[in-house]
Length: 521
Image (cartoon, rainbow, N blue to C red; front, side, top):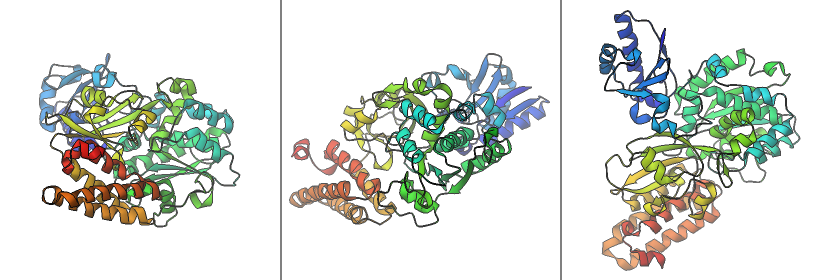
């Protein structure tokens, strides 16, 4: 029986994948043709969704984008046997967009049925856990440390060091918490993992539990991800029934239980201590540090808090070894980063590459340039708190330290592009406004500074032409406010809001009614 694949990913669904799948099944029945329809994850080529694949002896062939109205014509062209059709793209694995990537964390995404445990195991699933169960906690932590894996949620803190702290913290109960409250603009890699390959996250969290001696895990899931919630709960149930979760993991005598908890719908709950407060049933307020969550985390117990991508990368490291992963990347940025292309681009989607690729490569080789055909003027990397980078910095390699040199952050790997029509003064105002709305209110620099920032940006817009003397004072006030927020805020929400504000001001002064000399002064 011929297998036909239609994605069940949220992006594909929003573009009509369910209707396309139903049309394919109906047309096959109408023509008395036997097919097996499999709802896989998305390959990440979002501009080509719904992305339909057909299994052949040579591999899967792709047809895209397929709308219900295209289905009869596909059958007329005998697409089930690679018949010629305008939507025919050839072998999926030979598409240059995919072939140029290094997919490690996303090795199975788009290939397997997300909720099929058998499919996951057939594609090297649970090999990492099998190895981990035959190792001591300290040895597992050493492998993770030697791999060079750093947090993929934004802070880029070495994962092995965090695990080692929890491992050596004495406690009767320890926890593994997955920060799945993905809220940065232009990001969706966490969602794709949870919807399209949930077992890799479950396996990664289980390995973490075995490593540090934690028996309970929680996935703190963004409330706007209903499809991920359904997929994760189904996968957890199947993993538990098969003995990969529970009181006796794979007969090892070790226990690990896992639950999904809905997030509070607040951006600040992406900050790990605010997340823990919310998970405990409290208002999501940032905690003072120390103590660190690794020492006193959830319910006052030692807790590993990692991002989805960090945990989903653990299985391949424990399967292939630390050196295999460390061989990818550059400098202290080892391995790969799932990059999310969004904004004004022809080809938005998920790209996984080893650290070292440049923004220019991503924007033009993968993104295809701007959707409008106009020059790309600015790119924001790292979510709403990331710096705006001008064209002169597009050749910066994706590397934590290289980005730090230009006062920018890689963050969660989200890239949002803007063409020459963007008003960067308005974008700076938006950064202040976003912070004012999302602030938990616990510290004054964030709570008050962001509100005053919006007011001053409005005065700058009004005084650009009318009052040059007051205009200069307003610009200086923005810098003073940014300095206070940068150095006085309790967490990164207030502390990083100056990144988009000052980068917009420094790189695009003309949008603020300034010239380069005035900025330099």
